[in-house]
Length: 243
Image 1 (cartoon, helix red, strand yellow):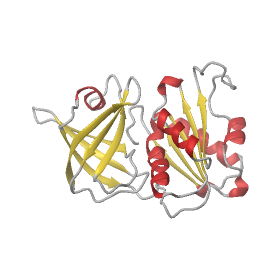
Image 2 (cartoon, rainbow, N blue to C red; image 1 turned 30 degrees about the vertical axis):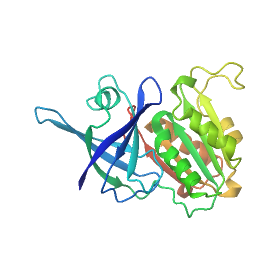
Image 3 (cartoon, helix red, strand yellow; image 1 turned 135 degrees about the vertical axis):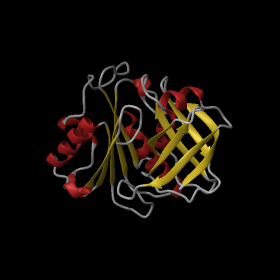
Image 4 (cartoon, rainbow, N blue to C red; image 1 turned 180 degrees about the horizontal axis):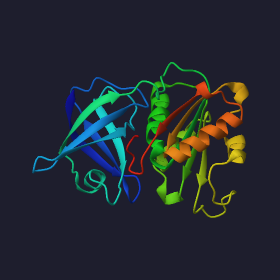
């Protein structure tokens, strides 16, 4: 079923990524981690559909947020990140998905691992936890190219400052902030050991990012002792679109 969402707010997360807030009057509600299909139709009738994870926590205001990263040769992402304006309408189908989700009744420790735009559904989980007042222990390991590529930076820091049970660790692969304690590099066994929950706590793990990142992180978690059935994964393309 396709629904109509009206753009009510736009916010640039980075130089190439934008969060779009849509008001959807007949939105049935969603669970953190789910996604939507977005259909864009050109004046000549040509249409294209892309899938984007929902960034917002479930709410009673019928608001849905998606964050899109622009791909220079993309069909849809340049339009969504450069041309869409407040008041425009987009077609949505969803919410979709029931496996890669975090529910507010969960109480076990949670390990989130994001690569690039893979932070989007994990941010929905962090926001959902905060809005519900859930006190589960959350850890986020967020891998990005450089500081300017971080989505939701100020909000993440504010949430972590307010709540000691939310722990943030950044892994910068190309450029680090000044005086950063680690050199640039990818997520490896040492970082997994230092920044994630030990297997003895049986955390539920959510890993999201490009396919190679997800496979590597999953193997590292498994090697650290986490059972495979405790690791949930979602693969993203470079535009923030799901695979």
